[in-house]
Amino acid sequence: MAAKALRTPFAWVFVAMVAVYFGVVLAAPELWLWLAAKEGPLEHAGHLALAAALSLWLVVVVRSTGPARGLAVCVSAYLGFALFEEIDWGAVYGLDLGHSLIARWTGGSTNLHNAQWKHASLLGWSVVWMGAPMGLFFALPLVPLGRVRRLWERCAPASSQPTEGALFLIAALLTTYIDGLPLLERGLGYVPRAGAGDPIGGPLGFLQIAFYAAWALVAWRALGELTRAASAAPAPGVG
Image 1: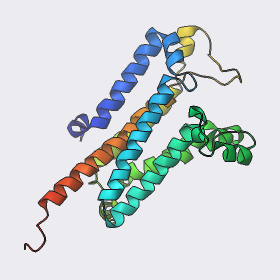
Image 2: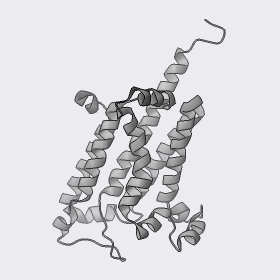
Image 3: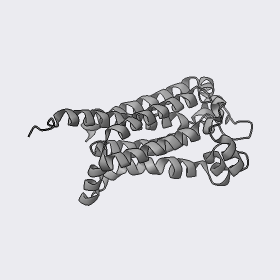
Image 4: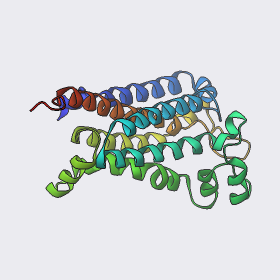
């Protein structure tokens, strides 16, 4: 499995992003603060990665059939919800795609995850809202039950890849660990904070881009498998 993991695109994407994070934070922490600023370059890059993943999954919805299409619809709905949350339902780009309604519901917040953060924790958003659906998708092929695996293979628009599931779990644990390292404090001599007093400059938003890329890579693989299956199918009336 180790050799196969090294040939998996997600592994290379995540390793590269971890290396970039450590390199920039340790060598130029002030540059990292600029990159990771609220609605800064990294957040916009995350929006693009999430939009790309959503676009590919919508193509999977169109090209798949049966239970696979149903699962692709669920993934697309999840990614669409995440994208709207990340762009504050349009407020980030000066559009009202629902943020005024969200603000009325939450008492002022333009998205649901910040409203939840005020009442619970960022961990609640990361694990329950964002992490759980993704963990379920990538972890199911690892369940050591033949019935679960057969159900997954029948419903998944792409072939089952236990290696991707293992890489996802490793990456999630590593992201949690790295997010807790006080690297910026070591480089700057203080904990950078926003006006409201919240710590800023953490790696979570940056490493999320790798997970969005994982969704895009799975959709790309699914489209390739759908194309090969269509080309291998006999022409109508031939048999």
